[in-house]
Image (cartoon, rainbow, N blue to C red; front, side):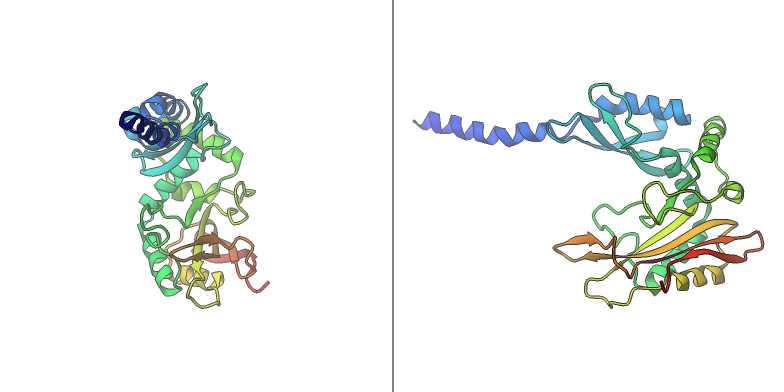
Length: 269
C-alpha cells in the first residue's frame, strides 16, 4: 500500500513537469534558423547575437524567442520560429531593422537620452527602470517607424555596409503610416507612460515636453512624435489606458537650423 502511494505521488508530481516541458524549448533548436535569418537578411554574424530566452505554449507550434543583437549596435528583438518548418514568422516577429535602427540611434544620441531622463523626472513619467523593475525594457518609450519602401532600401545598404548614420538617414525619411499603434507615426517616437495610481489626475502635456526638447537643442533634423499615455500600475494590477481621453500627443519636424514645426497635435482636443 505504501509503495502504491509513493507511485501515485510520483505520477502526480511528474504531471506539471511534463506540462512545463512543453512550455520551454532549448535554444539550440532555434539557434540555426535564427542565425540563418539574421545573416541572410541583415548580414549579422552568428557571434554577434545571443538568444536570451525561448518559450512555447503547450500544444502550440510557434516558439517565441527573445534575442540580443550585440553588433554593429546593441539592441533587442523578438522572433517567432515555427517548430515544424523552423522558419521565422515575420508577421508575428518584431521588425528587426527598426530595432537595429533604434540601437544605432541610442548609441549616437546619448544627449537625447539624458534630456529624456530629465523629462521623466520633471513630469513624473515612468522611467526606464520604473516601467518594469525585474526586466527593464530597452528604453521602453523609444520606437522607430520608417516607410516600408524606404526601409527596404535601407536594409539593402545596411546588409552591405553594416553601419547606420541615423542623422543622415533621418534627413531624407518621410513620415509613414502607423503599423502597430496610432502613436507610431513619426520616424523617432517617444511614448511616455504616466502612472495614474496614487498620482495626480492631471496627465502631463505632450506640448510642454516638446517645448523642453526644443530648448535643449538635442534633437537633430527629422520627424518626431511625443506622446503621453496613462497606465494604471499598482502592486497588484497593471493596465494600459489605451482609450483614456487624457492621452495626448504632438507630431513635429525639426529642420536643419533646429526650428520646430508642429504637424499634428491632440493636445487640447
